[in-house]
Image (cartoon, rainbow over all chains, first blue to last red; front, side, top):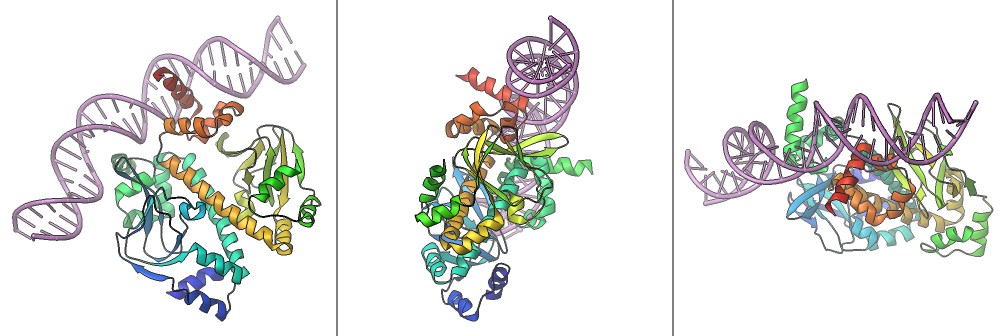
Length: 191
Length: 191
DNA sequence: TTTACTTTTTAACTTTAGTGAACGAGTTCC
DNA sequence: GGAACTCGTTCACTAAAGTTAAAAAGTAAA
């Protein structure tokens, strides 16, 4: 399982055995059960997540209703907004499935960054890439109708549609579950 | 004008005179006329922008129609996706108003980063913050109706509504100009 | 298996956005 | 001044999403 992390990092920088050992000794690998809530609204967490296996989601609780905004699956990184801004969290993070995650602490990361400048470079490049990806996703969301968004999701992340409940997918697409159901029926009709 | 940049950077790191001079000697300050296109679809640019004064916007050209996805005003940073991913650009960047910008080159930045490790830290923190901001904006967009988005824009960036044409604002809100017009009339009625 | 619960679908109705066309107010350019 | 444009608004009509409620399907627990 550790190798998944090292393979991922290898895309950005080559690590020595010493550096790998330093990472392993931090004891960041965790198994987490489906349904576990990793972060709650109002908490001041410093934890960041890297998904080795499984799926986690972020959601807001608005008028007692869950509004899912994102899913993170294998090889995805999630550093919650509250960790970066050092503010209480506005949303929840929970496990859609049983997961294997690395859970790291931002203090710990700062320490590693100063000890191994390589990691700072990895973090910078990764942040830039994630920002670029987020922008593209946002742009595409803005210029698409809900139906186009769903069809594009079918192309890009077909696994999500299988492994995630429809009502969570719906708010991810910016619509109500009923509308998603209708929209899917409409698409099937057309074929 | 240079001080605006240094004040901005001071939020992240304190610079020595030597470092400031190194930045100035790069000759990155530019005046640009309204309507100037800074980046075109298909180009492989390496330029990043920091807005000292004015407003620039990103837009896609779809079926001959402009779809505006973002505006960058005073103290905003724009590193186009194509610069980060080293791919041809999928969108345009142009000046909504006469602007004063810093225009930097990613090769140049890499050089500065290796010469002054401080800058790498600034870039990392800035990327992380921008990513956090982008996520929040995207989340808010997903969980809001066009009307709520407009009202929230009125709160958060009232200047934009004054300085930017309605049809550009409309696609920024994810709707057609006619819908924005109608939506505004609806809001006025309610009052 | 039965019960309880959650999720998804369907339906009827309301509200809002998309579409195409037209109009008037401003610009710019001969 | 008049022609050609752009921009914002309005209108009539169509299409799609929101809302409320209920039925159907699926899941988990007793």
